[in-house]
Length: 142
Image (cartoon, rainbow, N blue to C red; front, side):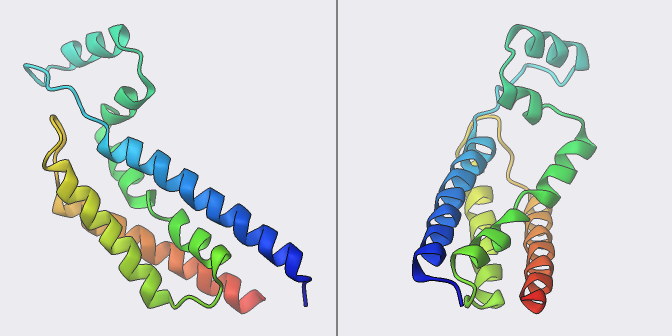
């Protein structure tokens, strides 16, 4: 059995990681996307050259990369939540992740240039399930 101090430090680190993760995730998901007059690739390329913002480059990335990002976006969430509380039920983790995804998608309706998409919600939810599968493996090992 681990001393109480080490367990507390692990939980504190995991809680800090969760806070940082949610902050960065919120920045990516809720960052306004500029509304360009056309979807012309040359206009997008020119915009990215003049506005070398990291977030814009991700927002205008290749469609497959954006889909992959949506699929992996919530993967760390179950792992971090399990590190904070290893007794949390996997159903609660899933509900928290799916609720977070729904909140992001609904909030995007209010942000200029952002698009709310049910497919993104499903992809995010699958990402949570993949994270839960990893947590199940970790729980079996320990």
